[in-house]
Length: 197
Image 1 (cartoon, rainbow, N blue to C red):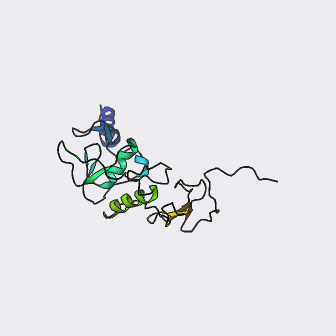
Image 2 (cartoon, rainbow, N blue to C red):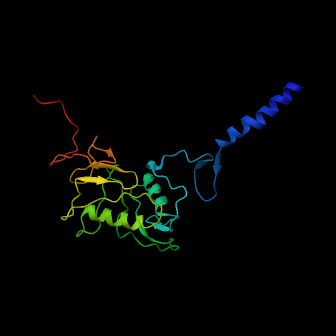
Image 3 (cartoon, rainbow, N blue to C red):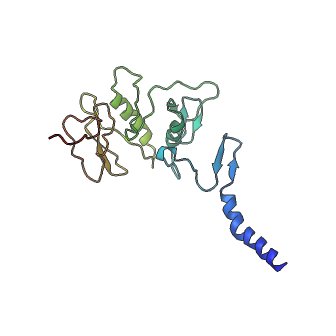
């Protein structure tokens, strides 16, 4: 009898809390499960915990608490863009005027909706808009005078800099921390091959 009491005490004091931490929490507002100890999804490496900001409306007609939350949703739906700042209006959301930025670290393409604006400038404008909110870790690309991507891109929050191709895709192996990488004049996205003799 004493042994069963010890087992119950052990289970209720030590094992039960551990098991409860991994039980999915069902939310009436969101479909799917969320884990009680942190969200087990990586969300493309985007963390929005304790992020302050204003609501934004996504092109899917949903309101997101912050631009960061919209960025996380883009990890699941690459077509999702910023429709406008503020909460979505019921049954009549505006269509996006510019694409939401994608991290050049991911090498994703951003199509410019405005033909007069380059891909780099379009991505930069949206990133600047989202970065106005405090504590948002938005990457803002640097553009040349002609609208092309600057050869070296840096993320001011992380301190990492890397080389990019003409279309803004990162060059594999070029990322350095708290330094400026040495980029060749004609940067390509091809990995280095065997040495030529």
